Length: 81
Image (cartoon, rainbow, N blue to C red; front, side):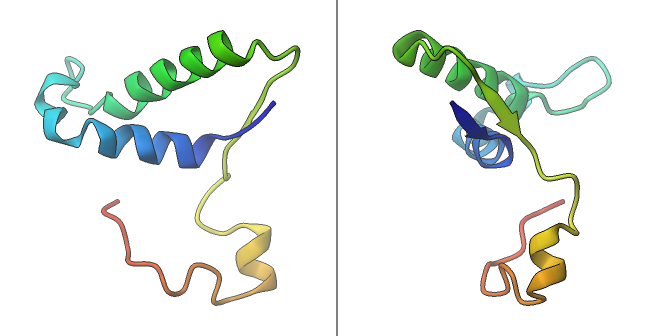
């Protein structure tokens, strides 16, 4: 099973966006994306029972896609960083 880690983390963060104040650590760092990601991953692993799993994350804002095509994701609204 191949999982797009950035996509799942993004979905997890916004799925719990209304509860941000409930998901912070002692330093004030928001942990909703980590919590939601783990819950989603656990559910998929339990239901699908894959023999192998790989979760891939983009390394940063510049990827091979942006190098090959400068307008990659050009039509998307900017998210808060």
